[in-house]
Length: 261
Image 1 (cartoon, rainbow, N blue to C red):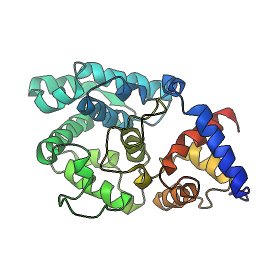
Image 2 (image 1 turned 90 degrees about the vertical axis):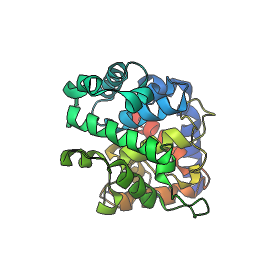
Image 3 (image 1 turned 45 degrees about the vertical axis):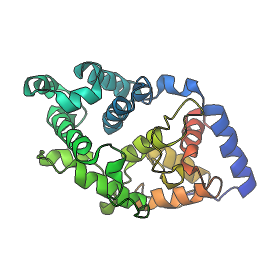
Image 4 (image 1 turned 60 degrees about the vertical axis):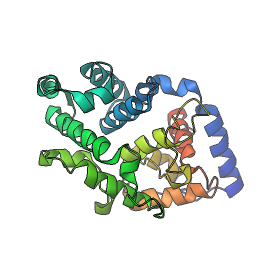
C-alpha cells in the first residue's frame, strides 16, 4: 500500500543524496547501459541501446550477456548491420532468444530500425513530428509516433507486444529507459546525452515493480497499478524536485531499492 509522504524537503534531500551517491561510472558495471556506452558512434550506440532496452527484463546478468551476444551477431557494428545486412547475414539471428523475444522479433526489429533510419534520418527524429515548427508532443504521443513508424514494415504480429503502447495503458518501461539513456546528460558518466531535440524535462520515469515499490514507500506514488497513469503520476511528483531533469531520480530510486534505503 502507498505510504504517507515524507516532508518535501526531507524527500528532496534523500533523492538528491541518492542520486549523487549512485549516479557514478561505477553504476554501469552491473547495468545494461554498459552496452550502448561501449560505442562512440551515435548510431551504433542508439541502435544497440534500443535492442538492449527491448530485452531489458529478467535478471540483469542475463540481459547484459544477451545484449553482448547481439553485438557479436551484428559483427560489432550494430548500425551498419541494421542498414546493410544481407538476407544470409540476417539468418544468423534466427536462433536468438531472450525470454519471449526471439529471432523472429529480432529480424522484425532490424527491419523496423532500417526503415526508421531510411525514412526519418535518425531514431530521435522518428519520435518527433515531421513539421520543423511543430510543438513538442507529450511523451505518450512521441512514443505513439515512433511505434507507428517503427512497425510500418512487414513484421510478425507477435513482435508488436515488444513495442510498448501507452495508449493501451502500458508503462513503456523499456522505451522510457532507452530515452533516458539517449537524452539525459552524460555529465555523471551514466547516461549518454546523445539526443538534443528531446529535452530531459520531457522524459518519463521507466517504471517497473522495483522503482514502483520504492516510490510508494516514499509516498511519491499512490496508484497501485504499474501502468501509464502511474508513470505520469510519479514523473509529475519528481518534477517538484527537478523540473528540468526529473528522470535523474530513476537512478536514485533504483539505488535506494538495492541498498534497502
